[in-house]
Image (cartoon, rainbow, N blue to C red):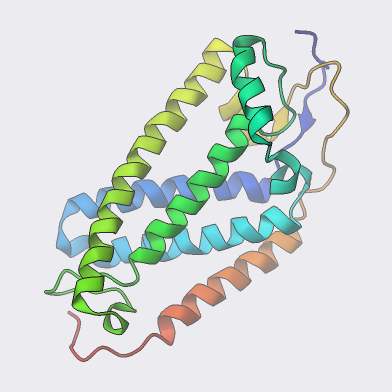
Length: 230
């Protein structure tokens, strides 16, 4: 496929930092969940960070640069099917491809749901989420079960994501990992010039502080439980 010889900036810096930060949160949550109850506090903090990142991504989908906006890459079911049918001959996308765009949204939503359910659960001994006291024991137990099942789904998504990255990297010769580091892609020659000129870092910082403040407020103003945490 003929390509423009000049790599063009497609992924803004805030989006790239968000991507790697979310990966760290998921990995950190995984490790601390398996490491034992003494790591539970750290596990909660990874969850709070993940919730902050999810809120930021949803806002960045509205206020971010061109290729960070969901309106730019969310495709119709017909377009997704056409992309799948085309297989290896599918035209390269400037930003997310039709299937990858929906996968990105699913990842954000499922991680957000995972972090949100963690606010309500308890181990019934030492630790509990900040909103555990506002739900019944049965509801908390149900949410705890959902929390564990969702994480199993996240593990499957991680494997699928890594497999897709490997396929596009070595099967289709598209440097996805490098692009998520430096933000640049070598575009097809027939693609319209859609490079971004500014990462809007100042706006991203304001939104991140706002999201962190919202999550911090949710935790700080959570109802005081009837028992003491250790």
